[in-house]
Image (tube, rainbow, N blue to C red; front, side, top):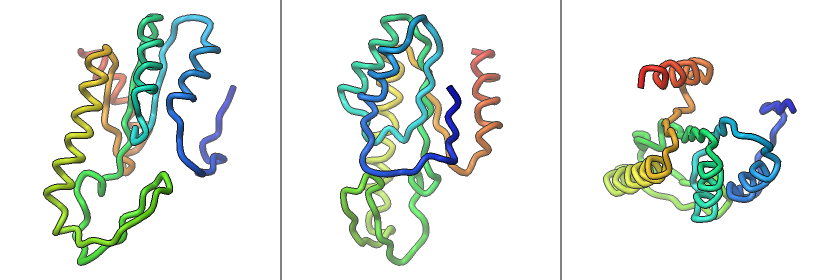
Length: 146
């Protein structure tokens, strides 16, 4: 089945666990499972479904997609921060929250990477300003060297 990403329209919240469960039910043999997501909604149910794939000996590769401004807040006097899942917004001065934000976001990335490592899943950080073809090529080439 071919999926054309340019035809996709964002809307509502994402249920990663439900999506993985549906794929798992259709998987007829072992394979490679690619998960491309910001993982903001990766909850216990999501990780349980990742475990299902791993217990069935699927190769699970997780590419966590992040905008560069999520790693380092932009230099602005003030900004409106909007939840991409539609759960509201707030105004703040990036400089006033920068250190706390960096610490929390890094903890989030570290926890995600730890969850992947504990399950034997490959984890890579993908930035939205990177060329996706080059990123994927490099990911495969790097994996061959490991």
